[in-house]
Image (cartoon, rainbow, N blue to C red):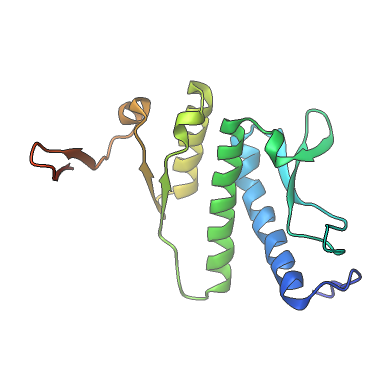
Length: 167
């Protein structure tokens, strides 16, 4: 790509930084939708404690126009950022893997931290992301999700200590 290594970071960290940039770029397509255009992720620039640029991510807040730490996002916003990064990473891995396709992704919990409006946004985005080409499995105990998802695999404990599965 012609990108220079002005900070003289070790090769492995340099390559990981380039891949992180690609992942963030892909993740921002999702995060923009999930945050209604308010937030974008970016690779934090500058020196870290080791003397060269790190692999840290920060958030650009479109409302204030400032960059801030990911830790300043609410729990629900952090979940949406993580979800966006998972989809971004999935896209980057697929782009590098040639003929290998990742046709499914499973999300374990996280939805409990979302309010009703954010939950609806996340579900709408997941439907859009899957686009009929990807299976998105959600593992959750959130009752509101049961009402909104039509195809479910429900696992319950039975009296003997085992589990029962209902499709």
